[in-house]
Image (cartoon, rainbow, N blue to C red; front, top):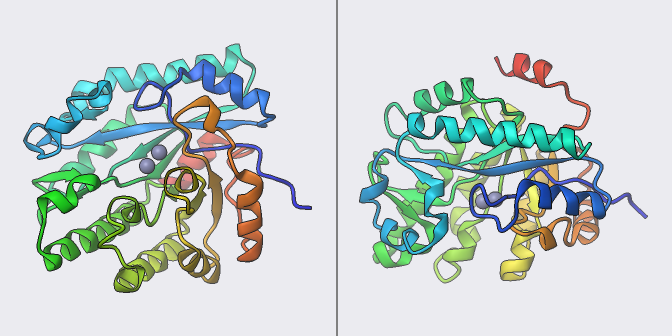
Length: 294
Ligand SMILES: [Zn+2]
Ligand SMILES: [Zn+2]
C-alpha cells in the first residue's frame, strides 16, 4: 500500500474560472486531510485579446475577466489575490502556496513583460499551462476548442498543434516554471484530429528539454473527469519515466468537490510507470527558491 499524495498544487478559485472562494477551497482541503496546498489561478495576457476569434465566445461567460490585454492593468488585482491567499493561510492555519497557471505566448516583448510583472508579485511557483494556439508570430491567438472551426486544412491544424508544443518548450527554457500541466491537453478538443504518433517527435523534444532544465510535470485526474483518461496518456507517462522527470499528481480542481479526486488511482499509475521522483514544495523555503531561479 503506497501513501497517497495529500496535497494539490493545481486548483482554481473564483478569482479565475473556479466555482469557489479561496476559503472554501482551503476548508475542503483541510476536510479531506491535505497537509498543505497551492492555489494556481490562471494568468492569460495577450496584447491582441479583443481581436481573438475566441473572444466573442468568452464574453458569454462571467469568467471572461480572467483574460487580459495588459499586464500593467491587472497588476493590482493579482497583487491583492496573492495577499488574500497569504491572509487565508494565516486565518485558517494552513500552509498555502501561491501559484499561477500561465499561458505562454511568444510574440516579441511578451516574456519581458511577464518577468517585470512577476517581479512585482508575491508568488511561490508557476505552472506552464497552454490552452491557446496561435499563428507563426503569435499575433493572433484563440482557444484550443476553436481550432477545428478556425483551421480546416489538415496541414494547417498540424502546424498549430506543433507550434503549441514548441511554445511550451519555450516556456520550459524560460526557467520560470516549476512544472508543465496537462501535456496532451490537445486531445480534449482535437480528439478527431490528434494522433499521438504524429506528434511523438514534438512531444519527446519537449520532454528532453524538460529533463535538461529539470522542469516537472503532472499526472492530472482532470482528464479522467472530463474525457475518461488521464493527462497525459500512458505512452507519454512512459517517456516521462524514462527521462526521470519529476512528477506531481494534480486534480486541477475548479470546484471543492474535485479536490483530491482519484488520487489513490493516480498513485497506482505512477507506481506502474515506476515514477518515484516527486514534486513537493512543502519544505522548500521561498527565498531559497527565488535565489535558485535567479
Ligand atoms: Zn489548464
Ligand atoms: Zn488548471
